Length: 422
Ligand code: GAL
Image 1: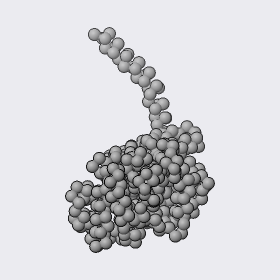
Image 2: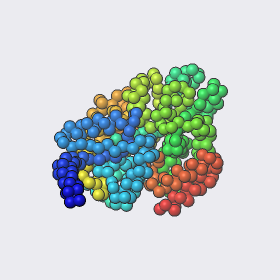
Image 3: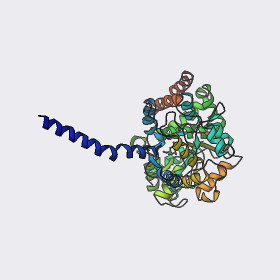
Image 4: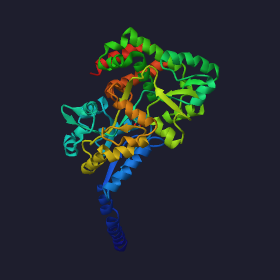
């Protein structure tokens, strides 16, 4: 019996002796040199830019490994929910993606992210980002995120060959013109507009509201509740309903990339989507801008730039705050931004980036962003214009609007939820 027990103890000891040096210390050491970065950039058109920046980060920080904790799903449709549960469980990644604007402000108010003003001072960043953008990441004089890019949401995409085949001279410059075109497009057996999951319908909604109400009317929606039930806003919502009725919503695309595929294939004529599609179409699909696909400002919104900005944070309780700061330095650097943005289909958040790197449509995008006559407004779907609580209520109301078509009820609900969520 004793022999048996001694044998068992010896086995346990031997296992412990072998196990300790093999696993515990080395894995701890390795873990200490890892930085976990959370985003929703996986898959075609999303991850190329991130990969380029990660490679540069690892080259500049010898021995540090970036753990890419990206969760797929356009506009963070899955990533944001998983992140919320991690933050609730006090298990934050070392840095996570957030949109500049009210989406980030929520995290600041609930203490989820740390003040990184000292990093801004150390890096001299206050001088290299536009003031309007700094305002969207500053709360009570303190800075909370590092913006890596600028995206434009209000674009309509099409295949010039499809327009030619249908005898359509140009993409619509108003939503009324779109609805006129839609009749003949349907008669020719094609779908006028392709949509994807709920977030793409919300993206379409904000684009129609901007096109119909103009930038002032659009901004009034986010600055108070009253504008929603005005006759003009109700009219714009009616237009949205008509536009949606011309879409493939009954058999909608799985995400934004499949929406683009339908446009390229010609089964659908138009899609409304942000400039990230440019990277997908040119780099992933190897298509040629203005030959295989083209884009224009979404109907009625030519002089407006519906902007959003992806930014990275330093969460409260991050396990590797020093490495996270190094990642943020990469995100805010010219080198990082100029590696990331040409591949992401976005333009740099920094004002001093090398504009020669932005070719094709991205050159025009950069020009428009910097044009003093351009009117910049903030995106609803991508976190600028509405805080998370109200935005989630708009999601629910929009889901019902898509089902029952009751625009009056939608407007009243959205206005009431604005007041309730203050
Ligand atoms: C946005 C994000 C973009 C792009 C897009 C599609 O919310 O800011 O960078 O990833 O979603 O997923």
